[in-house]
Length: 332
Image 1 (cartoon, one colour):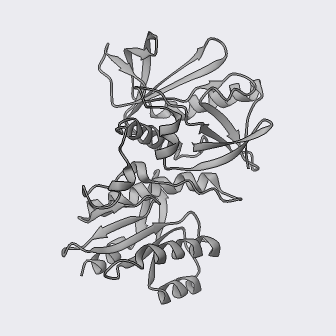
Image 2 (cartoon, one colour):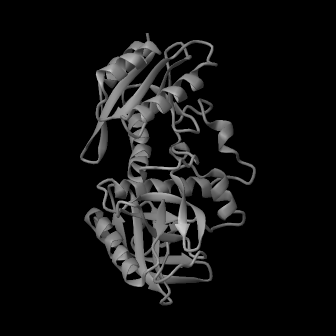
Image 3 (cartoon, rainbow, N blue to C red):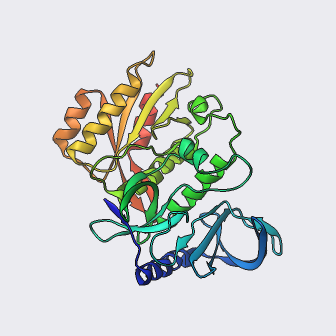
């Protein structure tokens, strides 16, 4: 289980690590006016052009590190408001502050968030908990346990993408109307792949948080690749991906798993079968697996009508081997 870090010197080192992880992606510094509830400050924000986010860090009142993040490149001298603040207490525990650093049994450090968001009326923790889909976890939080969102592992080469995806998901949640239910528009109503639906709220006992954070990005990369190949792509609430063929029917269902161990493959296969069994016409079922799995496992899956596509990471992007073949056959 992850444990929230509460030692002042450790938190200070983690804050420095966070800044070091972000700096290589900075392409510009921009003078702006940042608006906060009840105040505004003049500051130079960092613009990271590749993930498309800006950020600003400072120490606030001596009791927290203020980490503000927003989307889109601000105009020089303009006024901006942050999409999300991932503020972290400078020492000990403070559950009133939204962000924190947490460590797993292997010593890896993760940036987490408690779901405290602000903005217009009706935007708050309840809205966040009702709609956020991502990597949720129960953590050891001092003398209690808390449910938090795991944003990403700070030493991972994919961390900047994980952070940017979190910011975009929060932005989508804050844009929801009071009665807007994203579950009512998860398939092909608007013919879009919705990034904010990647992930879930299932909390197993033993987890590889780094792999789960990577998985969400792999789902996004898969959707982008399929669209680049000309497919009509939609996504479900569990992170699965659907495509439609020329006749308009669902032609394929894709499920991305976090590992190639038998347990990972079995869980992915079960999800594919259950999600496709009620479809009027049988789709092509594709299990998307990191690395490789044994030939025997592939043959067993094929007996269930499940095809396997492997993916690897190249320069921070998931690359899928043989995807064209599977998409082409599913559209016939």
